[in-house]
Image (cartoon, rainbow, N blue to C red; front, side, top):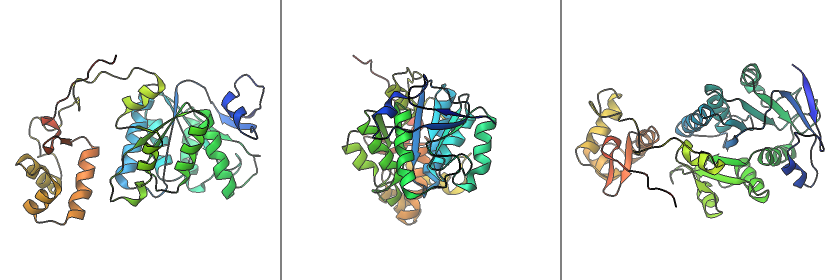
Length: 301
């Protein structure tokens, strides 16, 4: 596949890159495009729930026509690219290495799919360059400069994702962050990003709002009513028992633990999965089934 160079002064060269101390020359393989785009980044050591959320978020944005950019790493980055491939928009990988040595090697099949399905690989380094620690930071700067919005999904206090968010802030880009439960060290950095001004991201519409795009209207918190007919029977037995406990009035983790005689760690793990899937929601009175929680949008001034 043809590889081309985009240098400062070229019409499609991102002007934000000129704000970096040393504006890079980009090497591009595949079809880039500069339409609506969002970067989704996060830790390599992500939980299964965070990976699933990142993929779902990227898929919904891609189906809305938003190109998904990320760094090609394992964990959240890979999930973002996978989600991008599921929609109608392309996905773009910004590498910490040259195009002849795309990193990580374990994602070779994913990178091939990105190209096959109309996306691109981008590098700010010579084609034969292998990755070094400094190049990961440089890659983060390039990624942040190439997108108007960067969303962090699960990151520890010190991480490449937070480094990318820092670069985005310094470049005047918008930053979003997905909340992480306090018992997950892999996501402990989200609260720091929130305090630094990041916008909370709970659904695709939040990212679309940051882009200045109109998201789909939602008259309810969860448009589908997944538990309407029989709230529980389609779920695996452990989740059925947990959902029944909530339906029967257990509103908090300790009450669920008492009802099921199970340890808190196991209950919170399963509960997080149900929340991310939209089956359980936090209401003023505590945990409730999503089918019983209804909210309406209020017009914006």
